[in-house]
Length: 117
Image 1 (cartoon, helix red, strand yellow):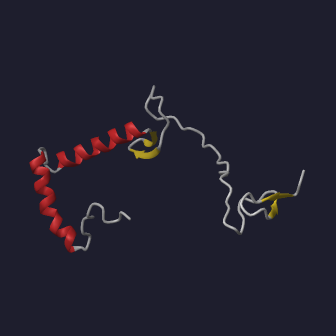
Image 2 (cartoon, rainbow, N blue to C red; image 1 turned 30 degrees about the vertical axis):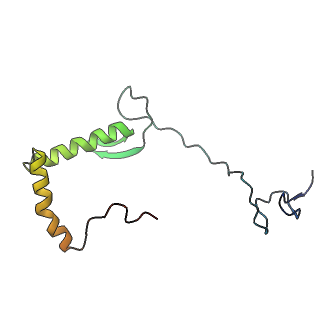
Image 3 (cartoon, rainbow, N blue to C red; image 1 turned 45 degrees about the horizontal axis):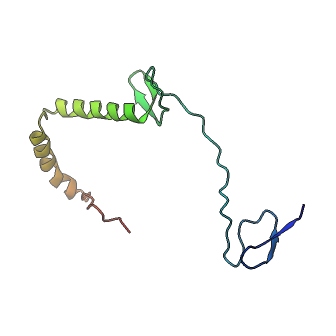
């Protein structure tokens, strides 16, 4: 086994484990990443692996994407119901009423596309 290999671009001798050369050549070999162990979703009979660990009233639960979205939707519905916001019109009116206070704090809403390069 050779301790050197040759750069495919400029024929320079390189160490056998080299992944780049001063001429600009780079090896396209991706480093091997270690696979994480899949964690099951806390809902019974859900075959999808969990993506989030969420604090619940009874402890912590590992939730898949669908059950996490379902939980967020339930919490949002409860939050709106506790404030008497039942229709879309009521929710929009609430947003319009608190938006000036948010802007006064200097937290202006993001303009779509402003961080696009």
